[in-house]
Image (cartoon, rainbow, N blue to C red):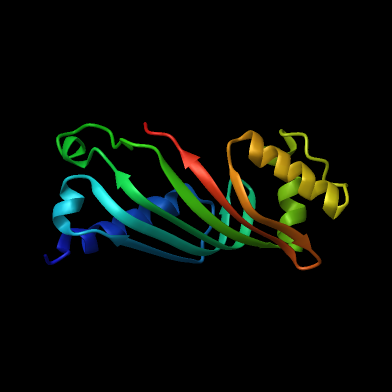
Length: 161
């Protein structure tokens, strides 16, 4: 198949994602799907890679998301319904932030609302972030804070809508 629809949807997704964040310098999206699969709402594999991202006051140098077996109600959406995720998925997230971005994030209203003390040591902050992420159902593969900043690899469960 030609993947004409798939090539057309990527720029639309980029526009939508750019509207969801306060800032993003570079944004790349790949959708590994044939046009037929996409018309049925099936996306076997997709990735989003971005640099210099700011979302709800949280900044990161680098973000990479990937998911597979994505099932959407695309046929119904084409008839006017809202877009919905039909089955739960797991999103794999890798993110890196500088030390300055980490300090700023720890003072953001979103993070402060979870009771994380920005004045804590790296070990204390890492422990608090680990506890917070686990309480949200996130599986942590890697979470490291060092002099250069923070690096994390996690798996985020996303419920069907």
